[in-house]
Length: 97
Image 1: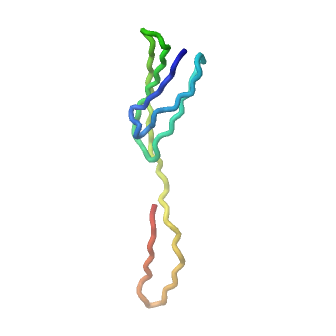
Image 2: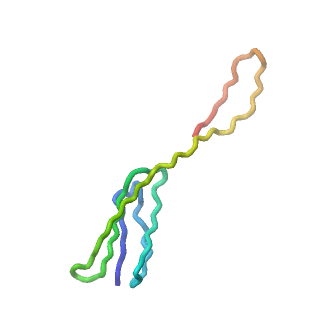
Image 3: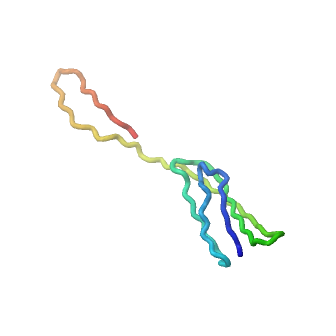
């Protein structure tokens, strides 16, 4: 029986992947979702263990680069204002996200 595991070198950017594998299939799948608003690099290490007492594991690594998304800024809705001509300026409170 083979066991497949995967770990991330930086779980603050990429949590440990979920491994979908059923022995003795020849393939497995890994699923991971980078942490929201993270950017940088992480190394994923995949290990296959055949359960024997010697020479039982093999590992492979691959890199993941996460780039931040440049989302457009937003402004909360601003209510219409009425200002009397010649009076002082209107004060608007705006939330920018």
